[in-house]
Each structure stands twice: as structure tokens, then as C-alpha cells.
Length: 148
Image (cartoon, rainbow, N blue to C red):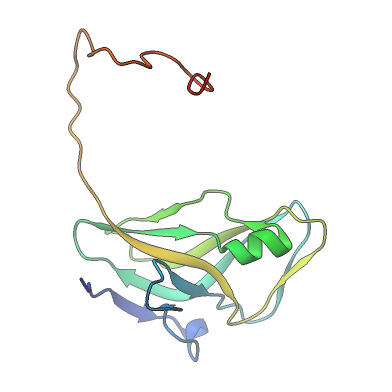
């Protein structure tokens, strides 16, 4: 199934390709850095990297912003709020919060694939209070309680 996402390219995003899937089976679209000058992120530091794009998602959808595994493995680059959620009613610029957990400075260059975006359906929940919950095998077992 294909869904159309309306996109507005901001001035600093001119000349960069729109997000796209790297392969036919890819779940995520690459988001590119729309920095005008290189941004150096020191170890332990974070930066907000612009994409140069604003979008209008179709109703009932979110865009999840996730880290790229290669950047995480090779450079320790992670997204601290992963997955980040872009709500259907947000119309500002897409930005990617990047954290350098590596041991060397990391330089973000213009056009670098900095993150991936996954389009996902959104379900709405209604909370219903109950005096008693049904029992399960795990019941109230907390962190680390399974597999013992």
C-alpha cells in the first residue's frame, strides 16, 4: 500500500533529495541533514540537525524517526528520544536530535543520511477504569521477572 505525504521544502533544504527507501524491502526512508555548514558533535554532546522539510501526514498516521544502525555501530551516533514521533498535525520543520555516544567527534555534513523515518498507523485508545484486572501468568512481575 502506498500513502502520499505532502512535503514542503524549506530554503536550506533546496537541492537535497526527498526522503526515499534505499531498497525495495526497506521499512524506513532516509532523512538527510540540511545543514548549511558542517556540524561537529563532540563525544557526549547532542545537536538538533535540520532536514529542510515540513510535512503534512495523512490523518491516522505518525512518522517515527529512528537511528541508522550503521552510524550507531561505527560512530556511536544515536537518537536519544528514539523513536521520535512526528504527529499528523505538526507542520514545522522535521529535526533530528543526534547524540554522540562515541569516543571521537562526529561531523554531520550536508546531505548525510542522518536518520530513518517509518510511516506508521496510529490507533486511538479510550481508558476504562476497572476495580479488578484479569489475572495472567506474569501478573505484577516487574522488570526482569520473565525468564527466571
